[in-house]
Image (cartoon, rainbow, N blue to C red; front, side):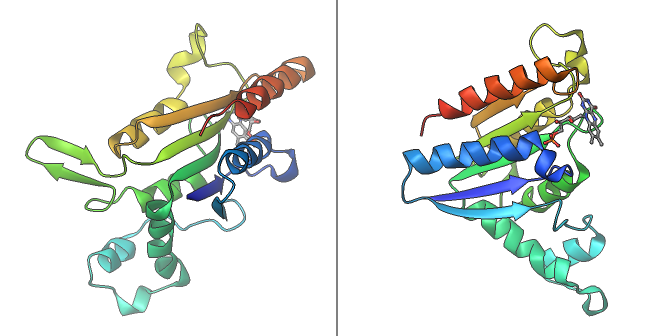
Length: 201
Ligand SMILES: Cc1cc2nc3c(=O)[nH]c(=O)nc-3n(C[C@H](O)[C@H](O)[C@H](O)COP(=O)(O)O)c2cc1C
């Protein structure tokens, strides 16, 4: 069984989503002892924005003048996603959405003919057999009855995106209220860590 572990926070050792995604991966290791883990740090090694050159290369007509290391990495990023049975993503909220580093990764894995396709009945996801666990962090509160729920373009976007790819086994391990104050931060981390420890196979 293969697990793909993605981090995107720019806050390094102070990052809660990194701490949580690591806890989740350790939990998955404990329930799947033979797990093979592949790690990608999108803050340390960011992907470029998707360009016309990437699309041309994917279409089999690469422009030799624009071939770059990033273009060569494009296929590998998709292969890593396709090969994974479980995907664990550290996904902080930035400006009500996700870090642009994570969006750049999504632009590499949402590929027509690979992870979804258009049929006469509409779009069809092709990645349905995967399990996705998101370590979601945010400074404020956006869940449940919060009036800010409409501003959540982080979890709602990820839910829409992975649903589009056909993935129904999607879990959010959420730590929120992290920037309200020390007590709320500690409570948010404790609740999410407890949730991570309960994750099943
Ligand atoms: C660039 C940036 C933008 C942020 N935007 C928001 C936001 O829109 N809403 C929010 O509640 N918190 C926001 N935060 C706070 C983060 O969500 C919070 O610090 C969280 O812990 C970040 O995850 P991390 O600890 O893994 O880096 C922002 C933080 C940064 C660095």
